[in-house]
Length: 166
Image (cartoon, rainbow, N blue to C red):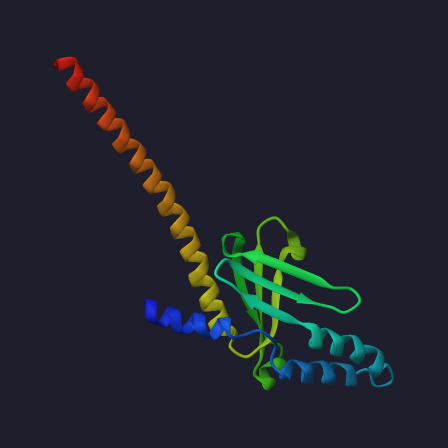
């Protein structure tokens, strides 16, 4: 992926702040399956939809929802282990999907689910690029520090030898 493609993808992903309207239709269809219990099923889903938000920043992802019981998750790109895409048949029909970002050691509670987005493939590609970038940068920084230490040690040894000979 070239840097221009990554920048264009980054712009598209950073513009995503809310789920697509089709997620509300998915919730309506889900609640209608219960007929009698439809209002009991739909009301919490509606409030979840209305309060759901996402934020993609240079350091990671944040997501939150809730009115009475608010929840917020933040995940840095360095903690990401794997990314999964999923679509059930209704989501496929509506053109939306879910991106699940997994972390190590946190179990299912540490997974962040970006639901009801249309450009889920773009989000996956963006997150993979960011994950690789974070790992490459951290690897490069440790290599640079090691090389700097070796250079300084060699200079000290050369200076010590020069003083002995003089």
